[in-house]
Image 1 (cartoon, rainbow, N blue to C red):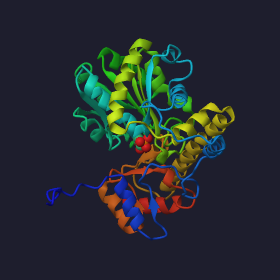
Image 2: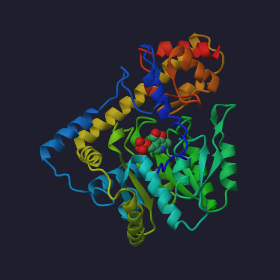
Image 3: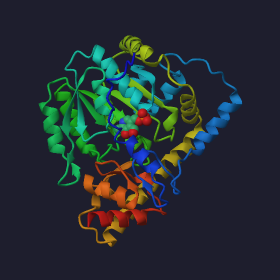
Length: 401
Ligand code: PLP
């Protein structure tokens, strides 16, 4: 019997599909600005020195490969939470954060939606910014919850549509779940200002909405891990019982190690224990327990003062190189008299720039210049370096003209 004769071909992933097209192009000038992974000044993946040193330490310890508990390595989740919330954060001090190790940020989001679909008694709707990271909607909808959008990007100003964002959050049914990118919004690179975060905190409180933070880029936005945690920490200080999905893929360069955490601020330690017992029941049938090695690396780095210090300089180095590329690309586009206003390339934050290129221009760049990016015109700034930025600016300028 042919059981699968009726299975239809699925669409290719809009982000990972770009990688396939790039791989198939053998032109030496090819440039890959699709996938959101850091590249060094020579366009190569970078394993951080702090990670290499942690690998050495771990190797010498000759640890075993036993299973972790369902909620992961306790030293890792403790240090990771302190990094996100701040050591002095009230719910940390009062031991009322339910935290579990997750399969990086994606897995954290999936635990969040799994838990919410079982236990959230408010409206089972997650409001997501428009545009957002392409995986948010399927992660929500796979659990049977609904997704809705709030306005975020203003095409006219190539900036934040703050009024539209507030109107949509205000109009959502009270108690809705509002997904917020903690910093370095993907794909726009546009974040609310501190003042705007404060307004959002008040608005969400008024509407009794639940804040679900996705923090995939702590440290990547500004180079400063505490500064990038501002929104999360402010909401917590204001008494929001937030949910946080934390990833170490980008800021520690641990992409394939899949290290992250899922956490929920609870009202008491007793509540935390109850909640955690149910979080375990979400995780167990998904993958039983999380992977060991990435968590051991993160715990070693965050828990060893010299390695922590080294890592902080390395995050800053990555953020600074990206900021430098923004400014070089901007200068070149202006010098080449590229029609349009390009200030947003410099003002946007984090790994990506939302260029404003149209799908036709994106296609033309791939076909004629061997330059690859997602169809929405998003470029990974980390894919640019001193060797290819001139070529890219010239190609982009040509595509716009
Ligand atoms: N959230 C956002 C906004 C992202 O951009 C990403 C990665 O690109 C993730 C979450 C999750 O990444 P990972 O599962 O690799 O931690």
